[in-house]
Image (tube, rainbow, N blue to C red; front, top):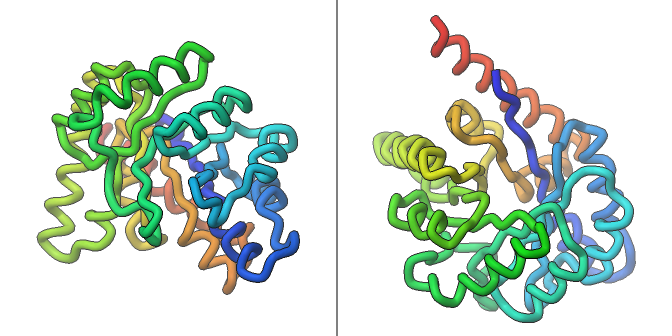
Length: 250
């Protein structure tokens, strides 16, 4: 059975800290705790408006954590310079709107192909793995492959928010795109909005090698603690993957 990695997004630990200023709660402490609880990597989104993660947080994360850092960033010169300076394990290019509460959808790799080309090539020149956060659509995957991206993280928001037959249809799109992306030579990840109740079906997709989860884990930590919420998510992912492997081999 292939191991499924868990990337823990610590953005909203910083959101709570920033609500009244100061240093508490510390997102770097959360990153270290996540590593101890079974996270394989840490994700942090440095936004243009610095609404949660700060430049100082990125400085500390790159120097103080022992597991890989996935830096989420918009395709801007400012963010490119920061990524090239810090050299995270991966840079995930995401769409960013100042007025949005959270990332509202996938990047348009087709329409933004020419703009993205420079960012993808410059990051890869510095041996930074490039991930594109995309909706699960075949045309977007093809554009990502042509751009030379290493990874596609499929946006799972539509699947999480759907119900009944619509959720089943969204799950099928994720399955089909994960398989197609792997055929194109892309490493397939997934994330956005996943919960204890919704993670299993996505974790069972064999071509998906990493899930990135943040807001739910931080929210659940209010009730059970961050260590407990991460360990439970890790267990649910592993159980779903094992069941899927068992069904496949039966």
